Amino acid sequence: MTKRNQHVVPHDNGWAVKGAGAGRATKVVPTQGEAIGIARGIARNQQSELLIHGEDGRIRARDSYGNDPFPPKG
Image 1 (cartoon, one colour):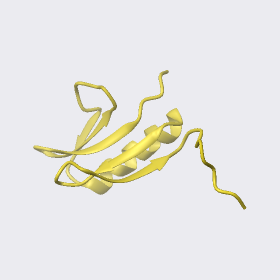
Image 2 (spheres, rainbow, N blue to C red; image 1 turned 120 degrees about the vertical axis):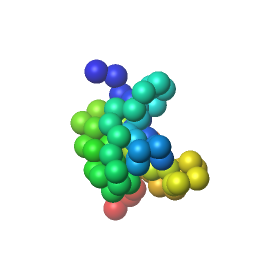
Image 3 (cartoon, rainbow, N blue to C red; image 1 turned 60 degrees about the vertical axis):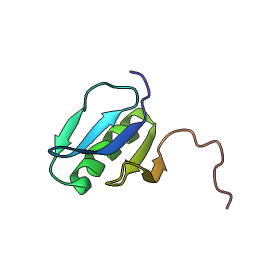
Image 4 (spheres, one colour; image 1 turned 45 degrees about the horizontal axis):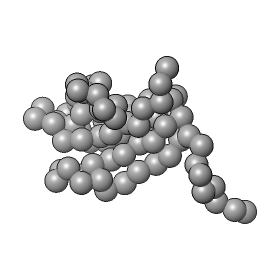
């Protein structure tokens, strides 16, 4: 299984979960919160990143579930 960053993006029918570089959405759901939950589970499983986009399409938040190059100290 390849590590693919997961994006939560606006969709005509609500919000979509898309793997980076994928042409089609993995899942389309009515709320952003539901899409974030699904994408977070996939990102944890694949040890990749979760990128949450706002309604304007710009990235508003991101979480890393893989090897973080700058882990916090302490």
